[in-house]
Each structure stands twice: as C-alpha cells, then as structure tokens.
Length: 125
Image (cartoon, rainbow, N blue to C red; front, top):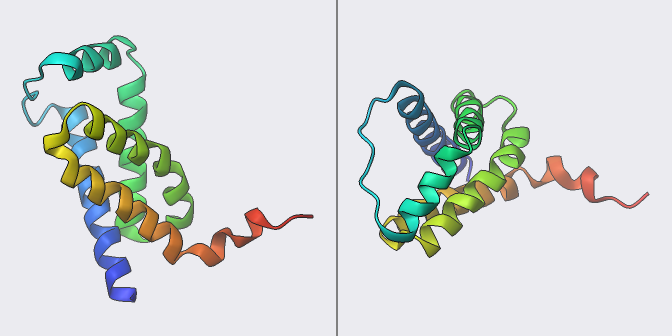
C-alpha cells in the first residue's frame, strides 16, 4: 500500500507541476477549443485571476506531493481544483475524462490513505 501511495502521489505531483509550469512559462501551445468549452475557457481567462490562482495551487500542491511534505494539507487544498477538473471534463470535454478521473480519484485515494490525519476534524465536541 505504501508503494501505491508514493506512486500516485508522485504522478499527481509531476502532473500538477507540469501543467502549472507550462501555464506560467507558456511552454506548450494553447489547445484549440470549440463550442461550449471555448466559451467557458474565454470566461476563465477573462476573470484574469482564476486560472493563475488554480495553477498556483497546483504548483504548490505538486511540490508538496513530490517532496512528501504537508501532503495532508495539500490533499484538502487541491480537492476543489480536482473536482472542477473532473466536472469540466465530464460536461465539456469528455475525450479528456480518463486523465480527469485519474486526478480526482488519485486525490481521493490520497485523502483516504491519510485518513488518520483528518479524523480530529470530524470529532464532535
């Protein structure tokens, strides 16, 4: 189980680092978008803060996953981002759904593998 945790954590960390660094440094060309996803993407870019915020969180959590430090906190921080990745791909670009499923369920797997660290949050006082 420990090896699976390290593998999934490392793969997610590398994926988050790659996507965030390529966003900020413009390393890969913009993918051609059409239809509803194009309108959604134009709206995201028009907000001017949402994509840099999401990519900054991906960068920080990617570093956390790679180094193995603060993984419990990074799991919670990146959860809304991974949920949005899943839902955007489910509704707007189903061809990218396998990667989105890996990212979301990988995050859920890491949360449950560190569940002991979260138990105190759910204790009634």
